[in-house]
Length: 180
Image (tube, rainbow, N blue to C red):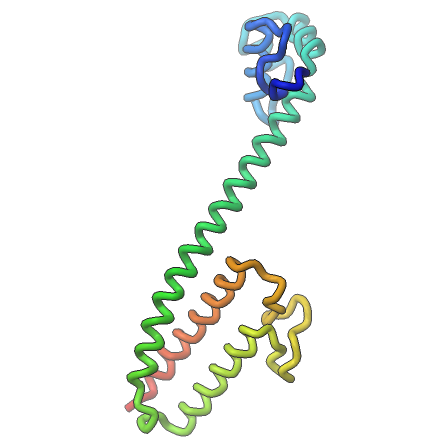
């Protein structure tokens, strides 16, 4: 294969007909076979086999598959990053609204059990945000729900904070229902 052409592109010395046959083979995906190409193009199997061997179709198709997989993974990675950014923006907006609601909260209207629940929730969220074990305040063990956040990417941290904010919002909704 030429250094300046991708494996799945037409190669030097490859006729137009041979390249079109390769493209047919390549595009069949995981179900590709010489027999299917011969049938689809109405060419002899012997001719297709000769082109396949001469132009290394199997290696070229594998290169194509790897490239398609790489492109798919890159697209999925970018989509995940976009989702994380969007969720972080939404979480930030929601957090602003929650903070505004908390600032308007009259502590004198909370029952002692409400105060205790608010304290428990805020302590748990703070410990989780710092990657601390909820039982003893020590850094969380690997694989636990409150994993060490220092190894997370910014997007992963934002996603984790969003999850914690959703939990807080749910708790606020629960606590808000107990006010009289």
